[in-house]
Image (cartoon, rainbow, N blue to C red):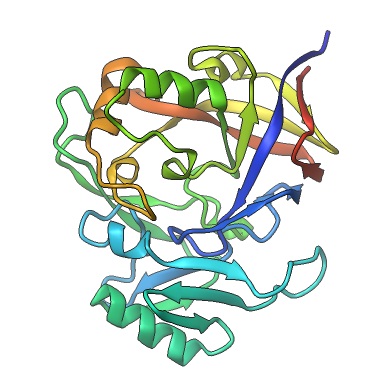
Length: 280
């Protein structure tokens, strides 16, 4: 028995890990997620680690970098250059020397642009001091298991979030500005009048979306990044505190604050805004 639980409201693609990305009306989904998503990252040449917005000292700097493709990427073709705006400067990945120079100056660290490869990759992750938060105060090197498959996504190819969860979080944190861009999902599903953290009920089920089939997975744990200033959004530690207090879920043996769920693509295909999400 199938069950339509909402429709696709928006798609986001992030050409470079931890940079601001692009909102799309349509996209191709494959085993690695949204085509051309998180296909590049910065590596700190001093540490050898991938630069991530989960690093306390670098998060708001790297989250201010805006990345977009010069032309729309097409399946089966080489990726076009990526244009990046950093403050009042714009540079492209077609001039790697200038690109690295501008990024290094903005981050105050020597960095280089890299693509995923066969070698294991890690990024540095800082965890704030919040009561009830597992790993509070820790600094960890975390792996990027999808790097060998061509993506710098953290754990799974897709992050799915619903309008119901955003509205519920906003009701729990009325003083906070709860905007979808703070949480950087791949797919935002409009669930209409549904209320609560509804996508947690979908874990373990398959679903069709446009021409693709998804396997809906575990709750997505949230971290320091949700609290950082980005774009017009201010720094706000209350966002993560509210999730710690109201939506902790089992993840790798810990009760982690979560928002949204992960998903895998088991049958590739195109998706577009307005497509229904139908649970199998």
